[in-house]
Image (tube, rainbow, N blue to C red; front, side):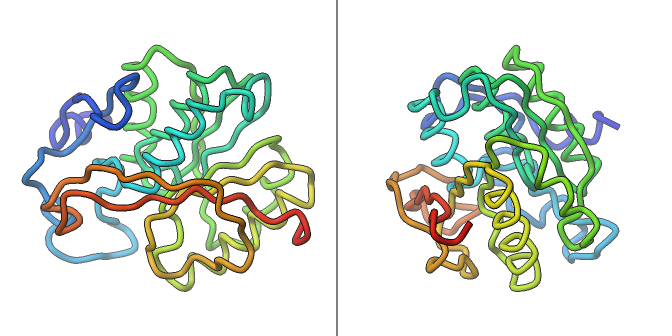
Length: 218
């Protein structure tokens, strides 16, 4: 239910993306504050409550280059808050779908889309389920932010993104050096210096890179 989102997050401005607003945890809140202190597969930490640096960078790039998504079917993969999806909808995408495995994230996406006055569809999609990869064939543009943070997820994400590209999709990724990005598959487009909460990243700014999947690897 969406009350889980509004209980732990409040609608707030994004200094790096002044066009948008997002339900976010407070500046002193860390990732594990509302998770009971430990990860479990049936209760993931509230990734949706934060505007992660890679996602902010990719959202900024989409807003500044609306021709990339305008009139196209767009997927925000493992969307978290749906920030990138909201940016794509604001930039004129024909349709935008944001997927995640966390029901609270799907609720947050709907609230964030409503707060920004844009249409965003939602769907549950688990990248660790091989059957989910058929969804890669359905979109013109696939966007992913801060997705490569575990080895297992990175492997599935890589397979999904390559399948989407082979089906003709433009694949763009935002990443803040999460550790498992297969950089040999991507060409770097640009980089941004993004403000982030110290409680989340143990620093006040992180560099966010935007990548495109290499044409030769489609």
